[in-house]
Image (cartoon, rainbow, N blue to C red; front, side):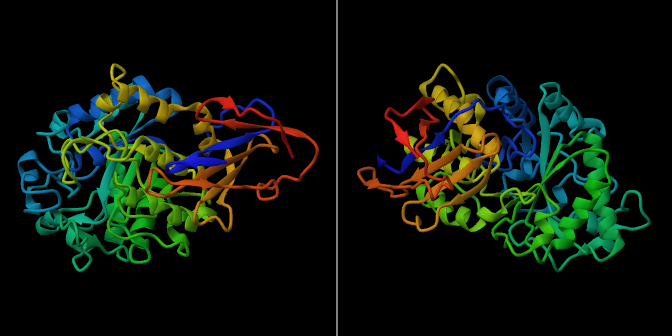
Length: 440
């Protein structure tokens, strides 16, 4: 197959049969506020993006609406910067637990927290999530607030020598002390009462913070609600030889934040290759969200803009995330990105909702890069619905539009025994079979 550009897409060998979509055990899909709003998102914006998911993406099983970090910082304090300034301005309850800032989330007034916002998201048939930092608020430690449901206080739980270096709002937690475990239990109980379905915990880097991971994980297990538990390392990344986190979470980040430049994206070919054996074992390695569409409305990552990635680069990125079975979390302003009166809106709807492409993420196994294809990666996967079906993705990672490559893959590399039977090669993006007669 010869391709021009950054990707020779993909595609798949379909031998025969009709396939039912498998929903259980697949990577999560949804939206996160970070790429568009960083620490500035408001309740109105969350509701608008939830409406867009409901209108355009829900039938393709995008279901999580996640409020990223600093939802507890008042708007006036954000002017100083995210994760900077006086931590005493953060909003906490009487038990030292962070609560939404009412000036940004008006429905949180009266001590309701995210309850009303979560109810609205749930009314659309979607699920609601929040970002948290590991640890306990420095403000709570200074006030030595009691820890809900225990005899302990904030100073008993705190580890002031383990402060996140890029976000000093929080002190670390001593999970070897029962007060630390009690604090994590208390915040999960609070989130459960709000109706939270997804918790993304940040600045967590094993092996240093295995206790934090287990503290939250066990609190979730003891709760009355099924909650997705996602880990983010901040400026570090996870190592596959440490099992304590992958066995106790839903998904865990394996890279730093990915943004809309080709260098940031193309580095994930090596990263995904390194983690391929850990896909769904039982959790999912997470190469970060998709910085595609209209980004950075309120962000420290450049001006408001359409993604700087070209059309071909965007399709390439989605192909890699799909064949790697990465969680599909969108980071754009969805009302703008999916506006169907614009050419961009029509493109992004087709990019995010192609049912044949999404099926690869839903119902494939043994996803892996074929050995010896590092320069021009070739990935493959086996269908969990049809033993004769293989998915193949051919990539050209060069950042030169005029470059042209030839890629080859054999039946043996696909795990198919050569026979005289014919088969079909299908382009999943175009929803059509390739012309010609193929013998295996």
